[in-house]
Length: 386
Image 1 (tube, rainbow, N blue to C red):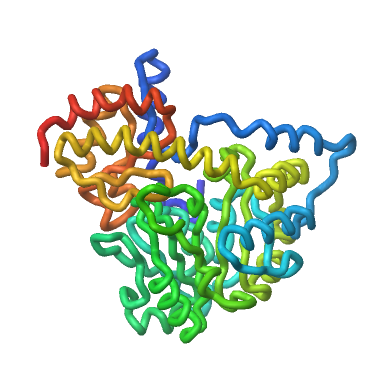
Image 2: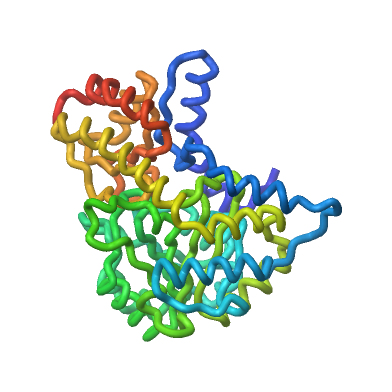
């Protein structure tokens, strides 16, 4: 069978190989604690599925790409509360079916495959930045991050900026949990505008952070973009903030012209969440208490697992925000194999691209009790300090 060359070249999604091995162990009835995929185990707060059930209609009809007005209003209110930024619910917001599809599909609205448009993205990073760009026909320019895993405008050569159509940033960063501060966001916005590059900020982890460590919550690019957010888009998600991974619900916020283009694309592809899911998202975006409670749970998990690596003498890098621990190890593949053999599943850093080698990522998705159970396995498998 003939395939799209991009699909053939990219091959299997890297983490799928780890998941396959984990499934084999689970199917064999062996114990398994899975830190590999960012899909938390805590129940979705009751009021969210209640809102969904109440909204299921007697007659099912197609949702629109623009989404429910009340959802856009709820997202705008959240952005105002969380970031102190006012956005127009009618023109600056579009709901999405989670953040992954939105990130993957965005280049199709903006890349001219005949013009040699470049898409910039950080590495290690979320593989979907590269995959969406390649399928849209763009040239890609991965930027290997420095030791603090923060992308700055100066890390990208001027000639690349001049060719770029899109530039992805991510804060809090997947896989490392680093946070980009306002001064660095300001530099990125200024450079992107100077080169007519659309700056795309993956901010789906912005409400997951350690309150007792960070002086301020992770900022948003919207805070430095100014009125209208010209040339800037923020990608938000209910998945981690509200425990709604299976609902597939998020939003893109920012430049009205870019939002209009995305609405046109999404109308063409018929990409939109069911309206009863959107009603659940209205409830989620309208409440901050549950997000704070979940933040506390993730902080508890992080402290338990980090302590194991601290005791062993392994360095945990960044990792004060987002859903992950990013740990420096001598050999990420060997550490992954050793832990998997004893029933603890992690992801080798190289799966997230160049610059990830020599690290492992642990997604804080097992329960608090499971995290405590994993500590003994981690210590027994990685007892020899680097």
